[in-house]
Image 1 (cartoon, rainbow over the protein chains, first blue to last red):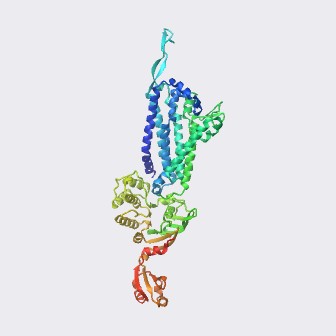
Image 2: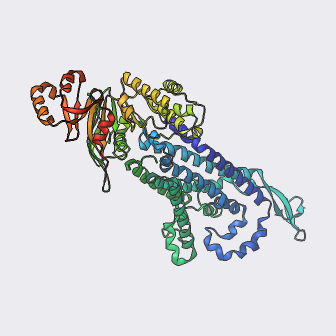
Length: 326
Length: 300
């Protein structure tokens, strides 16, 4: 009996999924291609100009002078976040208030279908779609890294001593640009934790949207509320980064757990294991002193929050009176 | 179990407003049960309580012995429900909607649904978004009336339909009954209730105020006239003389200017008695549902 319902949700999701999926798969490739056209060290003076804003960045700005760092910035690109969030808010808001608003809930729930099964079917399709979108981002990055080359300056070899296999460089010769495949400089697997973190952010926003949708009757209001909460959290996050005195606000914003750039740096530069839950740190950077959360911990926090929001939404929907269609 | 639907003292309050105010009713198995009442009387609230869409503030309702509040999924597997102004998935085509609802309900039948749609002259290849209101209603009717569920709940099924389709829908309702289904039929169209229902109930302000057998109502005639001076004396003496007949007589109104008497049963058995009645301008007419409805539903 759930098969037709899953099919219905799949076809409702498909246009948005295809549109966002295409953008999310293509955009990282284009972005990496663009990045590969430049010698990043040339941006050092520019980065220096933004030193005052470094406190707002999860990583030192010099990270963006590396291919690892600049590719990692893909996850903070507005277009990537916009696509993922649009999908999550659109799907999450639709499950209850969308069906109620269109008046289709009445005949749907007139079938022998529990409200829990209805929500579960919807979640199954929507969360699978979200996983597909996030995978598309990683596939785009993988394709970008493996199909693009960049010019890297190499010192010219001066003289090779016969019998010793030593090469002496000649300081008088200027370095030459050597075409280098990006995959020799950056590993695409480095971005797996960031991709999971993007999925976790989407999952949280989806759970929040379902929560708002489950007690509401109007989808436009649900979408407005979720966007309002999202913007409020963003402002809270920026505020928490602004001064040491407002740092205590960080745990109150879910953006504190969205750290894809930091993950790239911690794994790529600091050698943190990709799926570490935490590490003991002499310099406490996170919420618990002495302990620095690992990449998976951040994603787990978002998934936990999303699951709590979803569970509350399910509880509300199962208990509420359904308004008559208007 | 003789009753398919049993509702006992259902209350549903929204703040100070009582949508249901101690509503009780029983629907006999195999009958077509009409639900009547003015707007806001609580008909749709009652139906939605039976389906578990809203939880009553107090009271209990059962369908086929299943508790409507705690066993609503099992209840809905026994019910095919057509809401008032049914809304369907706009992106689907007509046959997609039939496929969907036939597959969703164990009582659904895709072949029968297509047959009903054909009887209603419905183009199933069109997307719901591009269907007229009447076409959408026909599509919803095809989904519901094709079901083999033991109970059909139809909330204003003929709204937005042309007279020919209305008649076809009523024929389909009768056919469902003849195949063993019980039908709960809510409508504002009195003639439809009169045509198709065996029993009807009138609701007002959240409670049932009158339940009656429609075929008995059809056999009831109303005598209206202007009484002569000896009327009161004649009436009392005539009741004493014809005690058997008096069981079938109800004096509804007795003023100096007008008397109204209802005669239940065959009117020809009372013709002799009627010919001696001391009234002027006597009029004998069948009691229609309108008369019953108007006598019950006094505008507030």
